[in-house]
Amino acid sequence: MNKDNGFAKKPAKLKKARICRYLILFLAAPIFISAAAAKDSWAIFFKKSLRPEISIIDTAPENGMQVALTYFPSKDPDSKQSSRILKLGPDKIEREIDASFAGRIHVIIARTNGGYFLAGTGSAGKENTEILVVRTDEDGKTVWEKPIEYRLFKDSYKIPRVAAAAADDGGVLVLFENWVKNQEYDSLRAVRLDEKGEPLWDKIYKLKEPRVPKWKYSSVSPVKAVAAGNGTFLIAGSRYTGRPWALKLDQDGNQVWINNFSEYSYGAIQDLALTREGGCVLIGRMSKLFEDDDKDGNSDSYDWLWIAALDPDGKIRTERRDNSLGGGRGGSAKAVASASDGGFILAGSVNPDPRRLENPKYFLMKLNGRLEQEWLKETMLDGQVSATDVVQTPDRGFLITGMLGSPSWKDGGRALWIFKTNPAGEMKDPEFYLVQLLESYHIILTPIQTTIITIMMLIYGD
Image (cartoon, rainbow, N blue to C red; front, top):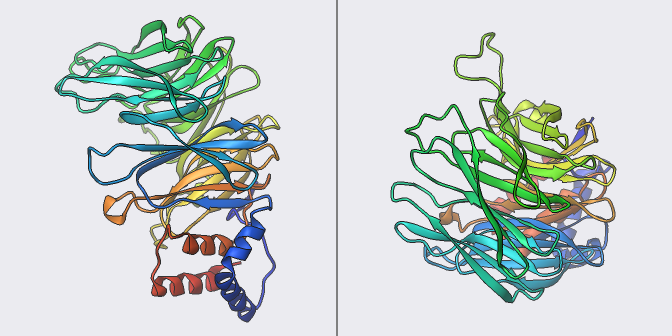
């Protein structure tokens, strides 16, 4: 296993030469940025925004990629959420598309026949809300809008979480939790719409959870849904009680299999990716220890990564738990994607070391087809950083999206970023990205902060 800080290695140089290089970088930042953009790694930063989200939605034509981002333009709780879809070229944003949505967007996905689907929650009242699905064309203009009525009880504390998957026939599958009080089972509702927005089927699935008392609320949150070929779908999520689940549906909405992971006491699935064999790989966090069940005092840290490969029947074929992040401090995996060599690529965040007062890092981890780790890259930026999505690019490199900065509204929100690495997961020298951050007006640093950062890089840099 090869582990480093995620940046390409460079030979040691004298401190005087290093200081000169920093001065040149600061004075000639635009030249360096434009010249370096044509290489096999690059970075794009966006201005700070409130409650932002960013994800990779599809591979675009001409070896480009598509990224979706959402944010709120003001602190007003009634402000309308903004959304943009970015079509990326080899080293830059080639086109920006604005998509309109009258509500709270939960997911944006690319439609198989062109255009996009946006799904989330619409107008909310005291007892009712609605699930809203919008289909747009390639320019972001609304083709149709489909509201789905949803009952929100007075004493429930949240609105449902919505997931969606583009179907092979140009339609869409929309999923959300069926929030009901005093029921004896968890339930998931799935609505299948055709390309014109007309319902093909509308079903509820009872995901039994025997450990939940009848007096407690019981719900399921769909996290990710993908089309799995031949009209089938794979869905994964978590329960309010902490027990994860995975489910496969056929083209008519019939349940093919379900895995409730009953051997675990607590867990959360974050993402899934399809395998070549017709199964899937799941990532998240899991704990096998039940209450008063730690007989030998063994550690079963929830901060370890949990990675599992399911066979086509939904049974665990390979499983491993990884505690290599941060030298054993752990972290959280947020995204997984298939790689061209039959392996997988993971991205997420690393827990900081409180003894060094350091910021969280983001990580990129490459696994082979047996889920064995091939390499791990951990990268720290100036601020709280986390990766949100990852995918392999046509040149066998990797595209990563994430957020930077404090989630507090008082701090003005977070900045979003897109990184492109080479096939080894390596980036350019840290100085290049420091300059780009300072020049982008996304992270405002005082002269004192800039001086401190430069001194720290002189001391601790390679």
